[in-house]
Image (cartoon, rainbow, N blue to C red; front, side, top):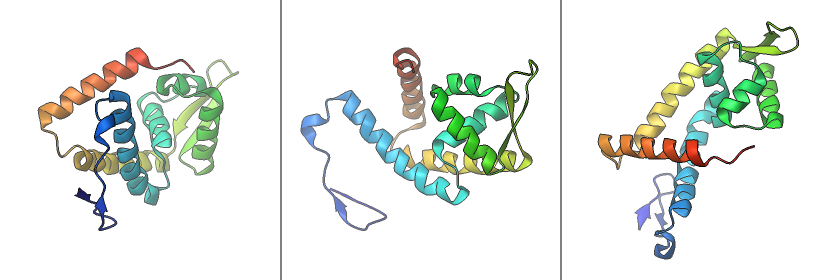
Length: 156
């Protein structure tokens, strides 16, 4: 049994009969890290998906919504809602694009600051979450996950 730091109670062990299923374990790992990410990003009023949008736009200012959604593998309706929220909170702005039919996305100064803060939070979350692994194991896990996500991601 493990002791939950936040609740101070013992967690039941993970059912051994499912521990041979990679997909089950990947889901459980995603659930666990999501709890940490949501908890630690909430004071910044940013979600993990919003962070992804901010990071892509910071790296490639001027992309349109469709391109950002494609890079993150987020469907059109979801990316519109994310950008609407980020624009509404003053972290991002839409500007007329070069072809005048599309809108280019750019971070505001506030968005740049918020992205940096979120990057620091996520770096700490990942250090904490991956602390049971050595540096070599963390890198091996990252490479394996990238390979799985790139090759096996279903289309939207």
